[in-house]
Length: 75
Ligand SMILES: [Zn+2]
Ligand SMILES: [Zn+2]
Ligand SMILES: [Zn+2]
Picture 1 (tube, rainbow, N blue to C red):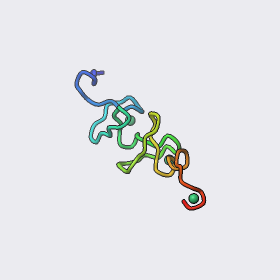
Picture 2: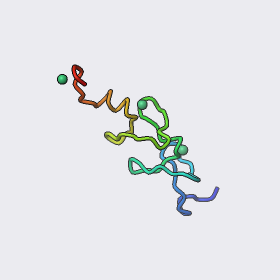
Picture 3: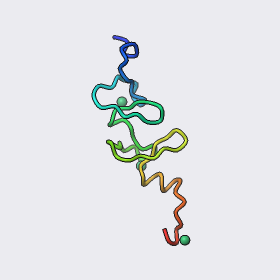
Picture 4: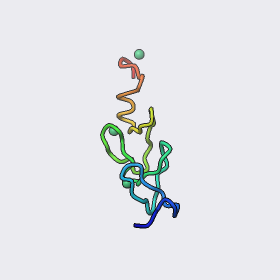
């Protein structure tokens, strides 16, 4: 196998395989678009907005569920 590191090919932080095509830069790593997923529901963001917290990425729904400080009375 060729050494992709030395060739400067980005390595996916999830599957550790070289990324060809579109790269997502997040959390200080690089990811396949389809492998950069919510830490809770594991759905890929596919370029949609994500929210980072303590080195993990979340979709808006789960970020709000886990960390949101929205008032339950008046939202
Ligand atoms: Zn991957
Ligand atoms: Zn989620
Ligand atoms: Zn309130």
